[in-house]
Length: 215
Image (cartoon, rainbow, N blue to C red):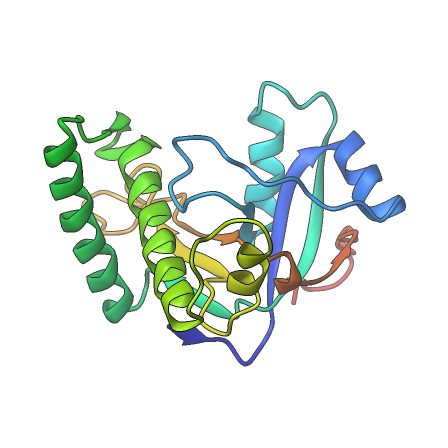
């Protein structure tokens, strides 16, 4: 697994009420645990993109007053889907998960809602990532000689150096950037934070000064 020595900046689109709760009152951002979350369950951030986080908030049905929370993040022990080694692990997990579903007589979940050849409802991907984390936790439990993964044993697993702290992935999205392009106009990188200690701190992104160049 990749261990990040540095810090990345992430942006979380939300309602102003959530912003106030986190920035003003010191609360935490709640995990997203939908069955279609493509990087699994955790707190989601747009890596380095305030604008995408704000646009997401503006387009979300449950958001009345769009806002963005900034965060300084250490990725820690990260499943990095831009790394070929980690991609192979995810593929191997899918193959094992498929065998398990076949044996149980359960249909594999599917990625759905395809737009421009990209799936937006990622139930299959979510379950594969969740299964990979479960495999990893089982290996940790074995390493610690734990009889099960309940109660205080969960805490021991989550404190282990090999516990998966985060997931990082590039998401191709949107139309061709120009005719015949291999780029899309909404490509972005998303982060899913599993370990809340990855988040060093939150901040309120300030508005740019239009009199000066952007940095």
